[in-house]
Image (cartoon, rainbow, N blue to C red):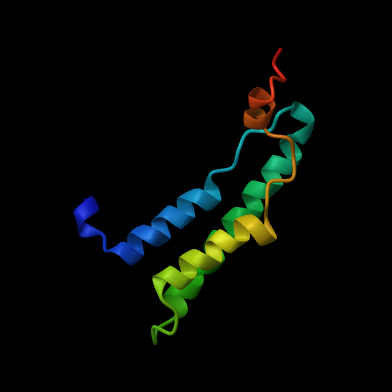
Length: 94
């Protein structure tokens, strides 16, 4: 199936995966922030998919949509809570 996808579609799907890949919270008290981040990012994906479907004239490329999604991660919905991965990397489990 990988060969059936063109480069732009692969780029868009990769961006969607990246946006929805939300790290685990380091502690229970940060779960609400993680849950809200998931909702915010899912809404961003939904918005981009709706824009693609509504763009009947092809005004934006799939690459541009992928770039918009990646901007969500850094500009609109970044991780703002302590993550389990960062805690483990800093030796917080010791």
